[in-house]
Length: 363
Ligand code: SF4
Image 1: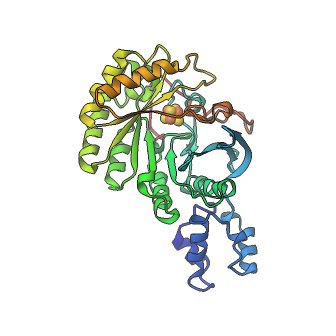
Image 2: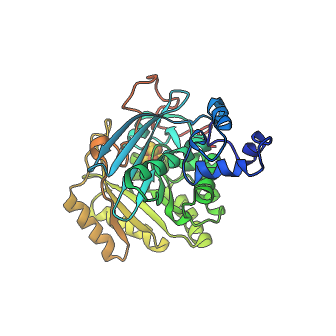
Image 3: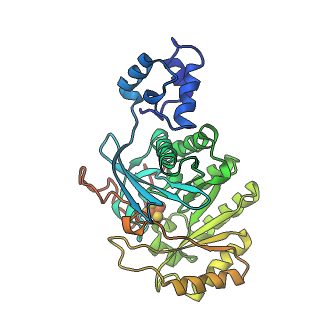
C-alpha cells in the first residue's frame, strides 16, 4: 500500500476524526496538484506530520536518477520500488504540449525481440498507485520545468503490457482522467494485441485512444518480432479491432517500428495498407532504436519517408514519430532495468520463450 493506492473511501475512513472535507482536500491536492500531504500547508501541521510518519501513506516511487536529453526537453526518471524493482518514466515537452510515457509493469512478459524491456523478462504488475504516481511526478516536474504549463498527455508506452494488467490499469485510467483531470482523448493505451484486454477496454465505453504495436502485417513475420502473435494471430486481432471500431467509433492507430531490411519494404507497406483500410486506422512510424540484444538497426530516414509516402498515397493518415531521448535510452523500445543493479536476478519469466504460456501473466 502506498500514497496513491489508497481509495477516497479509505482516506475518509482514515480521517474520520477530522472535518468531513479533509479527505477530499487531500485527495484533490495529491491528484490535481500533485502536492504531497506533508507539503500541504492548508492542513494542520500535526496531521501533516502524522501522515508523513505513516508507512502506508508513503510514496511508492523513489527517484534513483534523472537523465535528460534534447536540450532538457526529454527527461527520463528511473524509480526504485519498495521491493527493489525499478521502472522508468519519460517526460517529453513540445512547443504545444507535455506528454508523459508511463510504465504499467516492472519488466514485460511479451518478449518483443527488439524491445529492451521485453529482452529482460517479467517481474510483476504495477499497482494502481504506482501507475498514478508516475503521472503525479510528471505534473510536478512539468510545473518545475515549464512554469504554468500543465501536463497535457499520458501514453501507456513505457515498460510492460498495459492490457495484461487491466484491473490496475482501468482504475488508474479513471484516476488520471477524473481525479487528475486529463481528458480521455489525451490518454493513449498501447498494446501488443492482448485480445481479451482489448475487449474489456472497449467495454469501458470511454474516449481513450487505443494504439496497437503491430510492426508486421503477416503472421509469420510478426511472430518473429512479436511472439504473442502465436497466441493471438492477426486474423483474430483484426476481428476484435473491427468490433472495437464498430462499437466505440474510436479511431485505432498502429505503431510500426521501422527496422532496416526487416519490415520496411514496399511489400510490407502494401500488407499494412490492406489491414488499415477496412479499419480506417492511422499509422505511426517509429525509426527503431538500438537495444542491447537486437542485432538489427533502424531504417534509414529516406526509407522511412518513402514507406510513409506509400501509405499516404493509399489514403492512410501516417505520421513519423519524433525520436526523443535516444542518448539516454528513453526512446521507444529502450526502457529497461539496465541502469542500476538492485538485485541482479533474471526476470521471473524469461523473455520471449518459444511457447507463450500466459497463465499467471495476464490479470
Ligand atoms: S514492446 Fe511493449 S509489449 Fe513488447 S516487450 Fe516491449 S514493453 Fe512488452
